Image (cartoon, rainbow, N blue to C red; front, side, top):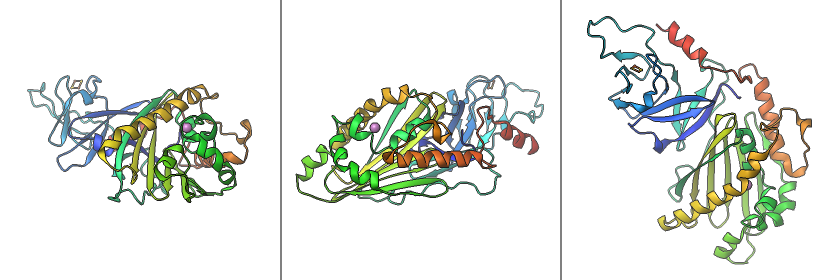
Length: 346
Ligand code: FES
Ligand code: CO
């Protein structure tokens, strides 16, 4: 896994003053908003008898365990123990590991690793995010596949011409020569590909704009560790931002913020959602069939052609990040460092 990165892990609007459990890298985490509206992220395990705090309730800034009513504040410290009538001081060990969170661009971002590292990888930028011209829907899907394979699927422009040939892939097939020639631009933590195609790229858009030749720019981008973007700029604009959430080694949840200036009316939301889910259902069996299930680190392990430039860029950056001293691959990563920081702050 990629450690010491900010992971997009939930839609911002999904976090309220009701506890919400999420799961990242096999770790259950409870999210809620405190009185000031800030998002709190705690390990979702009560240190008393191990119950899930997310089954309890939020009271003011604190979350209360459903089992014996212990309350914990946003820094993880226990403030109240109802079954302690002798008023013995609260045990100092009664603390829950806390995760650092940021809220930006419609997502909650959670830092997975050691926050004290230098050269912290930044959040990706999403420049058009708050443009009022867009109408936005939020779509969630789940696959029994490793998130690295899902990321590659989302940044792979050429599979659409084949796997999605009967839905929207026909237009992509015509654009294949331009796509395979397009240059991939890489930076330290991501890459992008932008290509002008001479006509609307799907039957859907042709229906709207007719057969007239127009230039449409499509662009794909990914940022480590787990977000990808797809955008279209034509007579309309479309932006899709994907959080590809590694729940565990074999489960990935994909949360998409889908914004468009085309059909930007409420009545079209259901239709667009249906297309998005249909597209995913076309991808899902293939994603779940891939072996090895994790994208190989060794570039020579699979075969690459011109159309694979984006996924090759992903493999290179992923490997580089794993080799960096502050981003190591380890399947045994635990919240040990969090425990340590909790005990040293006592
Ligand atoms: Fe949480 Fe007892 S298990 S208060
Ligand atoms: Co696809």
